[in-house]
Length: 145
Length: 291
Ligand code: SF4
Image (cartoon, rainbow over all chains, first blue to last red; front, top):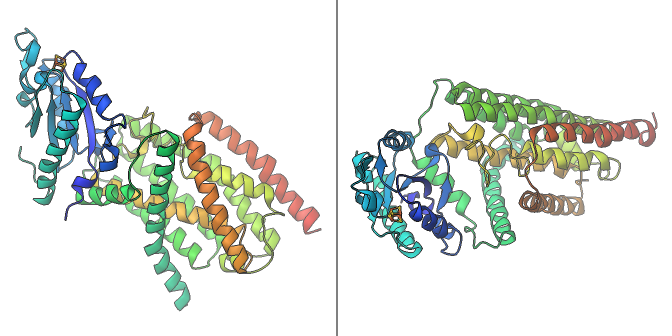
């Protein structure tokens, strides 16, 4: 059995958005939703992270940053896009500087739509992406890049 | 000889279990103090198991080698201690182990890691005098560096070595990088160094390093235990209770105190080493032993 599911460490990166999703992410991790009981932990270090949680969209300034963060994470790893902006560019889709959703730079494993999604759907989404992460871990840590 | 080998095997098997359980209890306690639901008791175990399942990537070809040497010396220090060997040798092995951990962090060249390494070195300079003073204190009091004799005979060293005992607790907190002295790795809460010396440890490597932390902690608490142990069951029980109490006090202290600056840690460690450690050594030599 894999222990991946028991201890997912999450790296949060806020892309080009209004930061509303970021506030919801912080709310979901504040302790009231019991994420810590399931082993979830926020980390600031991509090299320690298992799940990359992205909010906001991709613009020309952050695309390399996101790519680099993703590349610095060791296998197995999974990516979760939170909010409409991260899914497809959302509200700011037509902006000159917006490239699009997060799938423009990384392979997104699970999406949580909403503007902004509430903490409950975030918690549910985190558990979904955990399944993907666990699957990758059981398959011998092979990413599907 | 057989008992020595058995003790070493027992150390290698039991130390990570004890270290893990105590870390789990510590995390639960700090969660209660902070009013969080907190993680479960076995979370540190799950964390390490997951890390061991992950890949690892090393930023420099030397880092893994240095970490391997660190590992060998850490285990050797604990092995010598629990086999009842020479306390001074344990201290020297520990210093060497830390030196290699610092070298490993330097070798990566990554800025956070290097900054963490610099701090870890400062912390090493802060701690070692007191640890050596403690070993010397035991020698003056019981005429031996042998851990087996120190643990199994003579009176309780707590009263005649009270200063060293208190100083050792302070220094031990620094040595184990427990909050508010978590400067090198700057782990929980503040993250101003991302994760300091641990920044470049990934997956398996990080998992092994976490386990080394448990081994080291058990050895340090073993030395603390020597202050209480007098070869009788009561001494052993008191020793274990005091070790547990000190551990939980460290957890509570870590939760309520704000993180200190490296400068303060170094200075306070030296002041305490002189005020409690060296003075205690003189009292021990000239008053209690009456030489
Ligand atoms: S999805 Fe909505 S709430 Fe989230 S960052 Fe975009 S605009 Fe803000």
